[in-house]
Length: 172
Image 1 (tube, one colour):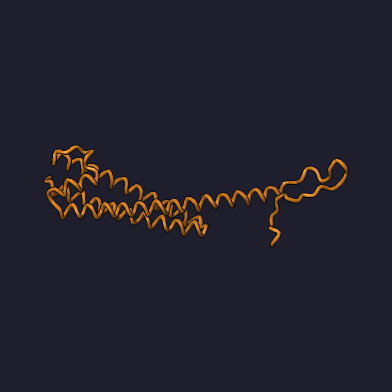
Image 2 (spheres, rainbow, N blue to C red):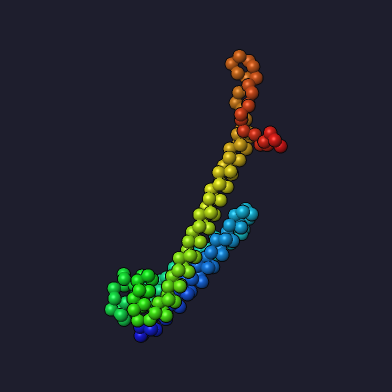
């Protein structure tokens, strides 16, 4: 395999990785909608979709690392120096057009990854807030449903349960 063929195969794999990250971003956005709607089926579908895409990203990344290893042998450079940023610098020395292609894919991947991370943080905060609300509701329901052990105090007067949990708010 020649240097150019090796670079072409790496570029194709990077394009595939970029496409997979686009799909992942859409899956994370769909997950947000499912979480907002509290639709369990859609949340499960979204999670399965994300897992499938992440598995595809891992496979593609392994293929990319293998192709980079082959390129390292061809150009006699240590593999650890052939990160995407390092590869851009090396390729820039003999093929400016190709290095610009790699640079644009690199920048697009960085943008996609940051958007995915941002959306995931939002989804995580949404889930955590929902769990806090569900826990508070559970405490209210269980507090109201639990029978009171003593309805009279030691002086024979009826105790008031003011401040205890309630199923409905006073505004309702």
